[in-house]
Image 1 (tube, helix red, strand yellow):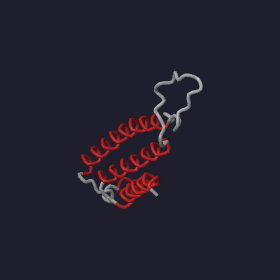
Image 2 (cartoon, rainbow, N blue to C red):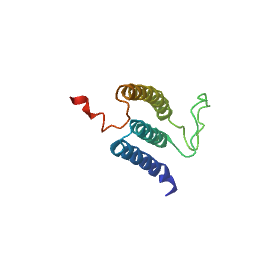
Image 3 (cartoon, rainbow, N blue to C red):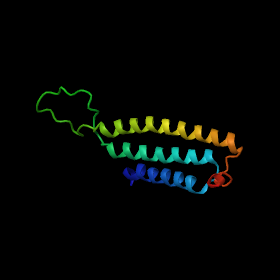
Length: 119
């Protein structure tokens, strides 16, 4: 049960983010929902790469025949998470710049009032 706690946290974060994206009308809140979903995905990647008792693969010149009890942790999930964080910050900056432009043009952040873009 204790080993599944990060997965429950991932599901909770993604559910909160999806609720915010789908049911809130404020554009800033929608952007926050996207960030929460991104945090859930990043936590999922880190949780997948976790190995109990594992060591970071920093020192690779081990003598032959030496066995590490927990094995080495894969560095790929951490690298993917770092890349995801950088991409997420860039996307958030782009979304917020769109929100600022929309607010300057329509003077509202309510997505229902902005739907007149179709006209």
